[in-house]
Image (tube, rainbow, N blue to C red; front, side, top):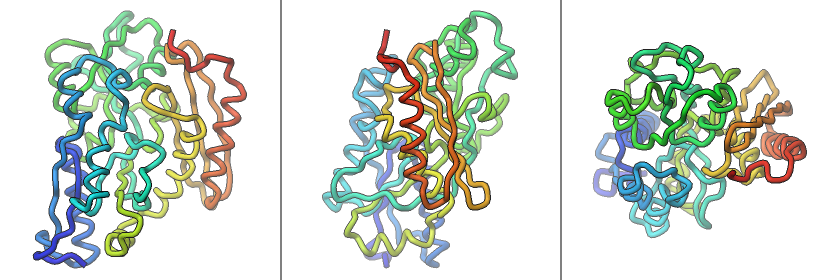
Length: 314
């Protein structure tokens, strides 16, 4: 177990949300093991993605290298022993980890819904025709253009604070943020309305925090085991298998959500053309222990319905 002389090093990006997630992880570890704060050290790591995001703030994420850019340096630090564990937003994680690393601890999942944020409009469907909406998410952009093709979508990247400032500056009439992130930051006050999953299915693993470790690190494994949320793990097994079979990335509009109903997993999924002109949706149910197989099956069913070139950019 860690001690003040040899604290467990928790790696994280430096954004306010990433730090909030790291602090939550530390608090849960302290409570689970009755350890003082000094037994843990939060280590902020600046990633290539953070640097590129500042330089190329108006370019889509897919053009600067994808979401893997936000994990590379953190995972390298873990493999080198500079940190012991890393805290991630699971919706931003690639489906495969580098050799030697393992993701097998998830915190209780937060609200999975998207938040509609606007200075002057209460709901997505109340936006006037031709209004400008800002989002950096290809999934949200495709869903928005599918539901409201009259709207104009502009690139809107940056952390929560940056996006809220852009709204104040009039760059767009509205944007979307994750309810989970706003709740963790104590910024529920900016939410005009939560978008129900029946209207816009969220990103795979939205609202979930994952904690990555070295596969052979028995100390980290023992520390993390008591804070792992089993139900979240079951849901993410299905969702991430769905994403993996679809070969999902930041260049592919994919949404998915698994929920538990008694002893059954219910998985809903959606794939869209990047321009939102077509959406293919489906669902599947199966035993809790077979989430990965369920996700793979649903992905194959949706792909079978997709015409050639479905994910191609026009």
